[in-house]
Image 1 (tube, rainbow, N blue to C red):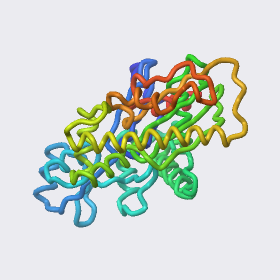
Image 2: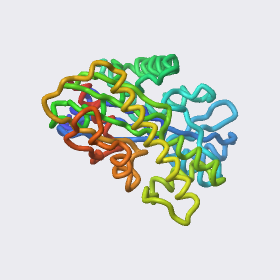
Image 3: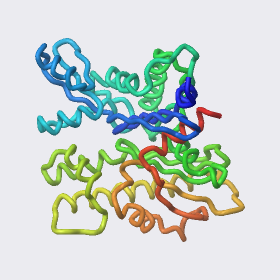
Length: 333
């Protein structure tokens, strides 16, 4: 057995996100990441098409009269057929309106991490912080993910997503600071001191909110807006392009909502820590990746008026893998 194989038997970090599922493993002493799109499309079943999909190495399963194509292959077929991908998760948790939700989620997780080899390998998986008024949905989501991982043979332990960001990004400050994960379904916030969460919450707005609202305003498919947003969109004021303008409007709405929730959450906690030095604030997540996002966030936050002194406000160097990295660190402790 070589060193890479030995490391791959060690604990795993798993970011179960609305848009992507990312697994982090320690390989040669460094984190190694793999990901799949958390999405699927269904195709009518035929033996000919099934054989061709297998020949092409497409990630799919046959269920009754349908073929369910999942992961990044679902995006390929979505583009070919000009249809929206379907999502196992909605607003950061299992989609209650999607009958395939849990089975597709299990299939994607199984593809990424396989079954445990019989040694009760530890998996730390991300869960959203509760949204006020929706605590039951987050509890059901956490229990369902744990059940999937346990059935695959793993010792499954949850970590709140915002705390995973702190662990993944703030070793230099002894895991003290504010982490904000801008996901597709939710935006997760955590203030932690020495790795202990002090304030943790999420709000029901993320990249999907931006895509859906901009799609309504422009008549475009939300899936296509998501791809445009990831490839070429820049938060740099208004332009003559209606799609760019719609994305800008709803991005500004998202940023304002998170900043207001952060201020209110800190003010309402009544137990802000007495810190002897400024703390970092780090942004991660796919929805924070457009150029100009950090500048827009700093303008909305107004650091001089913030209740805690900040040493820096920065974007993660690896925003798509930050949560999985923090979950991996937690799994190794």
